[in-house]
Length: 238
Image (tube, rainbow, N blue to C red):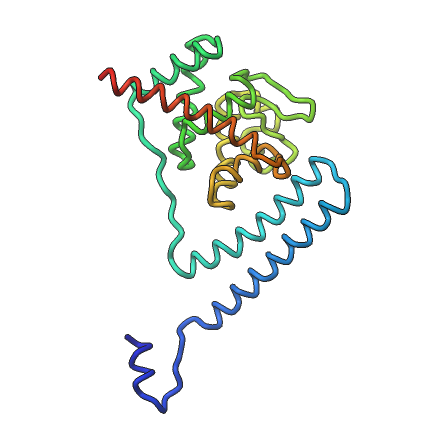
């Protein structure tokens, strides 16, 4: 209405609220896109290790996230979508499916599932996605450790996330399933927020942004589909 009345006035200059703010955001966005272009050139021109590529991609994602969240904050559109709520019976069905498929003791899996649901509520991430990441990363082995130093159920690389581990006593805490799931979910949530969609967030989680066909993300999503199918069978029986 304010814009319409200014136009009808004829002689008065038309004002657009927040124009200076929009200009600043566009300038920030232009800078972020320039970083993305530069990174693409560097990746093509200079062979780099996985760790270097991950740091470059993470820096670009942070710059892009800053621009996106600033724009959303100005528009009042930033929202956190709550993760689905599942009943105790559904958690038991998920536990039984995982224990049978991966030949892990029911009691151990029940603890992992419970921790995944807690972390899912805390960070607004689908707990089935969290459990699917565990399946692909470690096959539910809480003491798994990769050749590059990733640890635990969700194979967290401690050197990239020391800030998150400080409150838990350092990187050795990653062998505690509850800590590993909480920190892994926090990392996953950050990537989901930055990229706004699941496939890219999963590729970033795996440090596989240069993977041509998003194979890692497809594996995780396939595993989540199996868990969802187990829940559908439960609902069908009831």
